[in-house]
Image 1 (cartoon, rainbow, N blue to C red):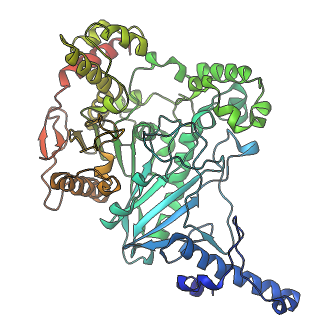
Image 2 (image 1 turned 30 degrees about the vertical axis):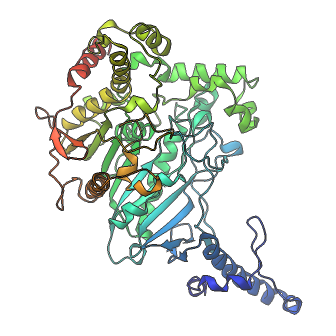
Image 3 (image 1 turned 135 degrees about the vertical axis):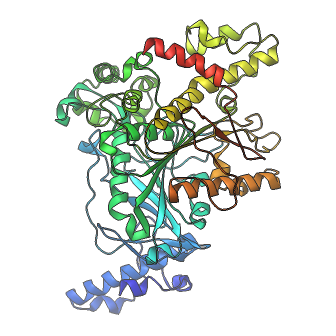
Length: 557
């Protein structure tokens, strides 16, 4: 009955009365309520299925998709322009109350058909993950994912590769509902796209002695990373209901999402949950000596001090605090980071990769030529104040690190600052990741994105160049989301990049169709694909500077 009703068309919506909130009921005439109790209850259940089904169609403005049957219950999504989408799908129980700062718990099943036509709230956060991003509603009940699939996928005629996208945002913010992460364009190319929300900030990464004792596993922190593991477990168990192939799952992310990918590749707990990996402008490979707070003992001490500062020295008192109090304290930054602890990350990723113990899967990684321009204001940097401003931001640095960034004029000083920040925050990590992975059995493909999007005059992005975030409009093929003067070269690059990404998800190799050949990044042959108006293999132009980072880091590792 419900399956039949789910195919009714939205034109019947005018016959219904929709009430505010989540309660949607039909306008029933009084005589119907004189039915015997059991008959009335059955009638109301069936009517509720009908009402919810029609309401979902009317609310989205899209046709209804076929129901997907997961292990916990049925989902009703929507269909639009040759793709289907299922939004706000729960993958773990709400981490609220006593479940705050606990490992994600398996969800309970539901009866009937669950509405999957609307995004769930984002996890609590401060600010947004990228400038000009629309703010999303937030709630601590936030462990949901979204799925875009080719329209035929749910019918099971064939299976499709799966790209699981982990949003960036410095582990402090980020939302799966921003338009840039819409997976429809990649679904049109034959991939299923899943975007995953995970706990952020203090709620996602607090370590504390009481939490370690409570865990029974000798560790705490990393709850946001554990959420990601839970989402991949859900994908392995359920993606077949949407036409996805659980043996062709790609973990992908940008910025902090890419850092998460590097951690998942190093985590024994993630073994077997994905078969390819994509990391864009992020990673975690620096020496632990540069981040002693990441050690569990230090992270616990910082967490305990944070609770004391909030006037909540015990775990029970911390769990009783309103989320606004936790997010509103500037000292939270000290406790928001990955933790080296036995549950999720027993060793630093560099050590795991160097020993060949990582999850050895095909890897696609890269970074952008002007990463820093969208993150750091260099407009007031001069030749005279270069070192002063740099010390204000990073503290005392080994002099050798700055040797490759020579300058004489103010313009050269601004470029030197931007190049240094690019290499410090992104370039070295990506090259180290590619080099370490290339020692394994699986293939590695690397890129260097140099295209400057045609940002609008006066826009917040005007000075970004090929900055952090810039590649996202191309690889998601979402140029039309911005009213910028895109050229045919931009559209061709977007088509090529989306094609490369989907081919990689499908085969573990980005090559195919009529795109230029992308050579593997190999030990002794470290070619990358330069992504711009012309697609061409080449070497990283900043290799000499990255070599300096390598020598300095090796000396303290």
